[in-house]
Amino acid sequence: MPQISQIKNLWHLCPMFGGFPMTILPDIALTYDDVLLAPQFSDVASRKTLSVETRLTRKIKMQIPIVSSNMDTVTEAEMAITMAREGGIGIIHRFLSVEEQTAQITRVKKTESFVVDHPFALNMTHTVGDAKRVVDETGTGGILILQKNVVTAPANTTLANAEKILHEHRIEKLPLVDEEGRLAGLITLKDIMKQMQYPHATKDARGRLAVGAAVGVKPRDMERVECVLEAGADCIVVDIAHGDSKQEIEMLCNIRRRFPGAQIIAGNVATADGTKRLLDAGADAVKVGVGPGSICVTRLVAGSGVPQLTAVIHCVQVARDYDVPVIADGGIRHPGDAAKALAAGAETVMIGSLLAGTDESPGLLMTRKGHKYKASRGMASTAANRDRKERDGERVAQEDLDEYVAEGVEAAVPYRGKAREVLTQLVGGIQSGMSYSGAHNLKEFHEKAIFVRMTSAGLKESMPHDVEVL
Ligand code: XMP
Image (cartoon, rainbow, N blue to C red):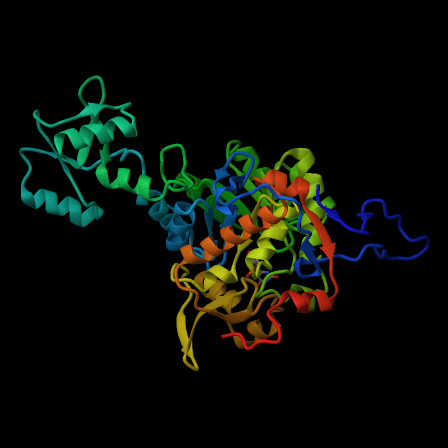
């Protein structure tokens, strides 16, 4: 249980101030820059040995605690593939038609699997023209030609055995057959190599890369839920800015009723009470963060929000009793921020702008004054709102735009190369933070962490200073 020295969480204990029509909570709320992790005795020889294995939801396990944001400048299929391969997960944003979002999920799911379930097959009577037609129509890279003398294996063959058979016979594809000799699947050398290349990948039970899908809370969003689950989405993110709301809870309950097995992430909230309401409605993970994001202006526009470290601590206190993980969403600018969020008890962090700057994000690459940038934008920005309406076939007049009260901005973020490099820095920083706290895994990190508060002078001292940074 992390401690904030000298500060007690009195939030729940706080009585209404007698006679006042409003409440001022007694604690000062803190964010990442307000604290540091106090260094503690450590027996860790190398930070690389520390486990950052975690949970995204009640049921989904991951090897790294990082999730890419469901934003249209951050996560589509390419980002989701990289995130899952590296051991995290990507959430495909919802600002696409249902068909487009479903196609993105399908693309992730088709990238790799232990076994190709329905390999394309022809028999000896088919012509080269038939084969070409199948390739053109399906985009498949290979077709099995069914005949008697091919090397096959039983349908339940393990990957290790399949690898042995492929090597023994110097072949690259191994058809699987059921007891009646019917084609039951295909294992390819390429898929086995991918398993070795990405040993930490987050996968579903069929060996396909894991991916999440964001949905809204309108009645028509139920169709979206059905389609993305059908396409294989591993979890649903019920995504609205103010998750502690009737609409969110109704949607959560509806999804739970219709799809009892679905893993549902609900949010966003920033208080203990909000977390409790989502948990009572059946959430499998709670996304925490109102206004900390790099492209958010909610706190300026609405005057609402809770500084993110305090928000995470309060929400975790409730979620722990339900044994449900918290996702700290937004405001991570440095690996140390991610370390602080996890030390505060979040089980994963959701990252927007840091990943928006990478090759895998859908945002546009641009050059300004000799430096490369990529576009990023808040999903409640005027531009995102206009594009959303246009996509839904609405005509958007200037007065509609003038009347829209944006809670997000459009921005350019520094280009950062491959997403893998950003993830390496984040994970390395988290492991370093664990090592300074003497923790070997994230559970220990949460238990052992001691936060010290600092002044603005401490923050200044924490930055490079009195030098010209090259
Ligand atoms: P970072 O700091 O990682 O934050 O870029 C990403 C998170 O910001 C949230 N988000 C928004 N919040 N207005 C907001 O108040 C917006 O327009 C907006 N767009 C995204 C979201 O939770 C994301 O994961």
